[in-house]
Length: 317
Image (cartoon, rainbow, N blue to C red; front, side, top):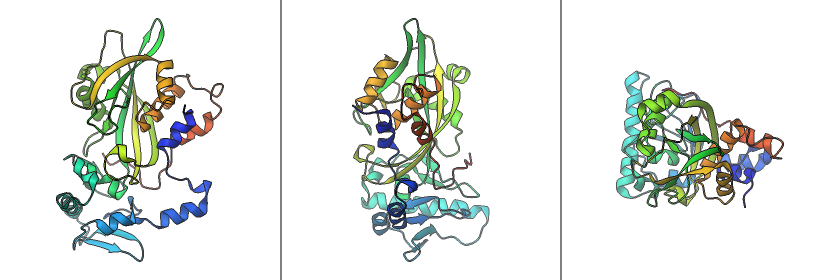
């Protein structure tokens, strides 16, 4: 049985500097810092073995002494930012065609934005953990207030997907380049749960963000140990008992309507996808279910749900 803090530790598992400064500095100093044109800070960390295997080509500067790398283009004109996106795309495509990384076998043909630059720079979604950039997504908890108390709609992930067979938040997904968080949750709600557009737009409530920093494990698909700092926009949607989600795409096997106690038991038994535990704990905190009276680690859990990441997080959307 896992405690609530155990659930946080399982997802937000990248070390904290204050816990052991010497070990933290030793670890981080082994990484290569990833820069892009217009960024004043590193936008990601690349593991040494990734640097060694990546087919960089002539359009990259890889400085092994200073442990930094960036796609090289001359000038600061707006079109040069697009050239950087092209250099990144061509490099990842070469790696995919060469079978260099397992993670690229999950190629999505979906672009993520690299935040922290002056202009828009994009990267294939499946390549993002190779560069350790911050990725952004949306998560929504859909619930019903019944005569027997609150109940939550919980989906089970399809077997063929990453974290197959585990439970998930009602609706979740990544934010593609050029997409606003709100439009992303509306789209995902239709694709994963068949929720009508007008229902979501009129009912869903924005509830802030959650951030964490993970080492990926084998269940995420691809190589274990890749870096995944994430920011997720959180939404709640209360619906009536007549609203029943139904799988539309192939992400979800089915939905079940569970009491809070049933959800808490499933969490403690590690039946949920690891990062989903964080959103549900946040939901329980915001709805007064998890309180300082019933959770001894309340303060640490609240603070850990909003980790300050070591990369730019201003969103250029």
